[in-house]
Amino acid sequence: MELTVVVASLEARHTIASCLNRLASACAGLEHEILVCDASTDGTGELVRARLDPQQVLGFPVGTLAPELWREGIARARGRVVALTTAHCLVTPDWASALIGAIDGGAAAAGGPFRVGPGTGPTDWAVFYLRYSAFLPAVMGRGRTDGELAGDNAAYRHAGLMRHPDVYAHGFWELDMHRVIRSEGGWLEAVPAAVCEFGRAFPFGAVVRHRFAHGQHSGASRVSQGIRPAWQIVAGSPLVPVILARRAAGRVIADGGSWRFWVALPWFLALASAWAAGEALGAWRRSRE
Image (tube, rainbow, N blue to C red; front, side):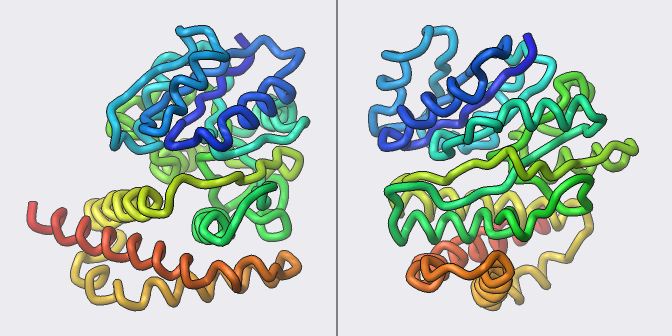
């Protein structure tokens, strides 16, 4: 098996059909499998089961986060390369071959840039710029990178993942794996041809909950790794939304500018506030353990 694609599926009934169609096109000609790990309440799972073999669709409890869904898919993967994405991402035709080519060229992990997909609106743009502004085409660059890759558009050597199951025992948080890869002398590659378009996101309330939960993990991780003491994270949390907005604005301008960012800014700040609150809570709780 050349490639396993693990799709984390959360409230994606509006995009799941396009997601699967795009994946089928990008993976045509490759010996591959697609595993959809679903924890939706909007009927996404039923739509997937109507299209794929039952063994390709794995159901999980509501509230399961995308990194936890990726972990479950990785545990069942058979491909020598494992690619991760979500059901809101729409890959482009060269996506699979470009990622595999980078892995075969020596990279331990490879990932591509993002752009806004069709049929999206302000709340989707807010999610996009908060989550993916660092991965805009002009910002991400190409080749070996000292930056990061987005787990939603990344591929890894399966054998490399299998050496470190403890790293993602509580969910595949890509930054944790990237630290391990680099500590072993491996490298990450930015692959411009492996483009993902971000489609319609889940309902805004669900996005807020997910950003809060992801922020909690970030805060706890930063404290446990000694990156920053809890008091600094808590004290600085009111400034985080402004800092994230300024950072994203700079990246948008570097990428050529987009009016979508400014339209989405109120929703962006709301999501960034949820992240900051979660990060502060996660840091405080970890410091009390």
